[in-house]
Length: 388
Ligand SMILES: *Cc1c(COP(=O)(O)O)cnc(C)c1O
Image (cartoon, rainbow, N blue to C red; front, side, top):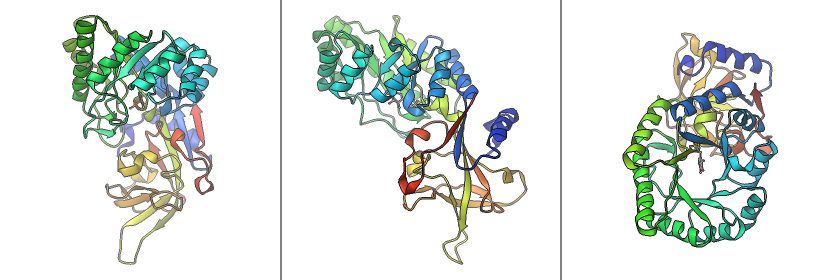
């Protein structure tokens, strides 16, 4: 773990200065970094309309910063919708991107001006037709996220190619506007070639609808899935963009509209979760493995460590010393034995760490605050600060 792979000394200083005298634990999010990641993505994909997936971090500070950059927004519920609208964003920059929604939610969104909905099931489509007449709909197809995504989103969402075609035909019959196809290759997707497979499925839907049903779709919604920088190296966004643009050009010889729905890649790297060591212990006199218990855990910010899937880089200033390191088990503060972040994978930390020392969990801007429990064991929601 090299701190300068993650932050310039100037960026780190900014976070340190802010964090110095605040009681642990808390998350600090650097909004300039969110802005940088947004602009990097937009420059890499100049043709794309970016819809920020609000669920990754639904704070008004982030929504407002992205609003200034002309981002659009992908919302998962009427509650996120209200939040985004309250920031003054107009409904034509919002997409209702959850396939699972009540009829009453569709009606609520329609009444607020939303005219763009995803679907992947006939019953949902019929609700949209009834409560959001004449809206644009896009259909989500199932794609394999394989073993290369660290946080898969397959199986639960999307339908197969034939059903996608049938739904778009049905959409037209019901007075909706069949608009396009979406997919999500799985979050933290490390293998860009997965987009190629997905885009081939999209092409099949486009072609069949055009040739057999006279319906010309326009939208490819290539989802999220772009990586944040955790422990492992990742390819640059520019690499992802170059490859994905090639795949699109391979598949489509006419003009299409491209949407992206990034969550993790925009906000992940912008967050640092500041924690403190509560206890260091061994399980027996003979067992040399140290257990380090911190004041953050699975239930207050680090739920994506479940199954040790997301591997956050952890920094302590003691790493700069020559102190020898050894592997530790890292666990949270609650009375629940699933509250263990890392046990199987190796986390070497300095041997001279003591109780009260701070541990910094890097790249924790996404899927942390919104995933923290409210009062489990009495712990309050994760406190979060946003640096302008
Ligand atoms: C969660 C989600 C996203 C964001 O995915 P990331 O991997 O965080 O970029 C985008 N679109 C939809 C529909 C989602 O459910």
